[in-house]
Length: 226
Image (cartoon, rainbow, N blue to C red):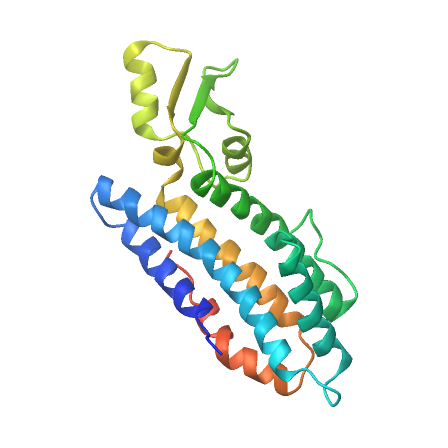
């Protein structure tokens, strides 16, 4: 069995830390790497959890292990979203899904939204506009507004300067450039660690729990430097 999720996450943290000290262009690259790898680590984890459960399934295994392996495999066959897989796993383990409106799931769902914009969408423009007090705020896209509302992403100094220079009340910028920041990368790592640790916390004590603790807990406990 491959255990790659922790390594992917550690690389995300390393890239995030690099984005704090690198020159601007490299910092954006490092931040983008951190965001994408943090998200991929959550996908790797849920797939590896399925594999581990299937490997330990059988007549002598606790029912929840059999259910976890089988149901996650069925979810994969039906191409269920990664958010649905985490909710399904949490429900099997605790009889309750994650609270969609609270941490860690709320940040995780937003992280998946950011990742989808980066990986799947066509190049898009992000827009800031002055409010009644003259303050520049994100108004498009919805993801940008959500990141701003959660105090994850503000309006960059370069964008503020550009708006001032041309005397504009609204200005558009490249989404990828604006989202590739150290603050977003740091949040992405924390969001990934939060959902993985939230699921690890739900696994009943026993041999299976001991395996996943050794395989994942330390790696997903290493967060970006403050």
